[in-house]
Length: 487
Image (cartoon, rainbow, N blue to C red; front, side, top):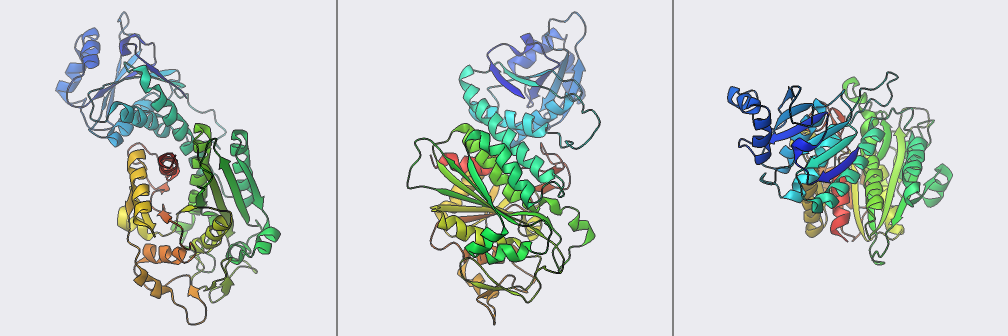
């Protein structure tokens, strides 16, 4: 979608739909347009049809002969924060489905978010809220708006709009990867997609095959992937920004289990049907590096995606197996459905060997996160308080919300094994996300490291605010904001 910021009055811009944000008080633009419509908008407010409820939209067709350049006007409820702006913008663009053409948003500088924040939230709401996941349908898709004009805004805000468009587009690319069918997004398919998407931006990469993975000693990744006919890959992608600090290499590690049956701890039917989304962390890393590269941020980033299918078969790993990780630690397998932490352990070791100075892993790791946070917040675990705070702040600034979770050394004893260095689950019925993070902590050494558990936020069971049902692109905006904060 083309995004423009224009100082022109909203009523003067030709469009299929003019969206007027309504926060409970009428803006100057609202009053002008209401006057051109003979008070029709005021009557909608007085009747209660148009309200300030975020995301509620009422569409009015403009009568012939009106001085308004738009053919329709939508009064869209908007609240007092940036998420409310995103939700309102999504409602506006959804009101224009089937129309195509242009949507105009009447910028209101008096809304609570600062102008640049409002612009950012507005663009994200339109692009992320207007995303169509139906890529695989053979029927002709409905017309969708092709152009967004933010009218009545200072042109100095254009930079914020351009940045938001880039990040939103890469968020939607990550969503397409997660929504992709597992017969297409296999480990090799994900590697091919990463290359196709990122190489035009100058991002280098390689996908290590099983023989190379074994040669490096990544025994955990090999163990998880050997039960599938679709062999594992270790996807290594690198961005070198101009004028970047030579002594800083941000390591992003994304869990990329392209389908997870649970192995011999087979998942129940209601859960297994969603397991194409278990590569949401890997998709987030691809999306974030794409956004970072397109924005040209002066930073060095390495993205590592341990990609595998966790399947049942004659070669599949079993409960009670002992696996030797790349770090040299042996792991007793107590649950084959706790495979994500195994592949991440090897990938975290590999990222360190490649010179990463700070680490973040992002993974759909534990279902218990949904019980704790619903589908709103990502949990942030870290071995460094300042690093954790930086990630939480990046989530708040980007709208990709995150919240700090505890990680205490006393949890480590729950992973003690009588026959190996460590086991992959505790066997207890409590503390799943923290214990999983404690497992990963064993493989990061002294580097600042954080773990983002996106299990509850990466794939939504129902529409929520400006996000539709299905893949959300969780992590892309947060990681891009994090990288920006390091420049």
